[in-house]
Image (cartoon, rainbow, N blue to C red):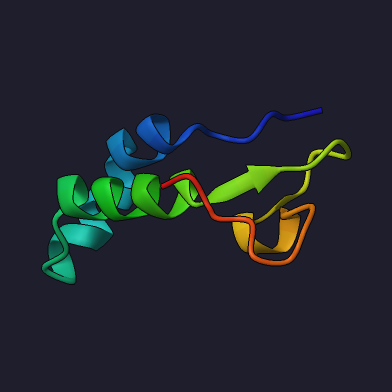
Amino acid sequence: MKRELTLDELLADPLVLTVMRADRVHPEKVGRQLRRIGDRLNNTADGKAVPCWMAAKSLGEACTW
């Protein structure tokens, strides 16, 4: 079974970099944005990521970001 690439591996892949360059997308900026989004997600027990507000145990529980 093949494992998924990490974000760093994906953003260092030559093919991905070529496409990003052609589209005038900056890998560092995309990496920062994706990490920021990832920080807002909580991983559940079954390994699925959900927004922190959905994982709140009680109404009004704040996200910690």
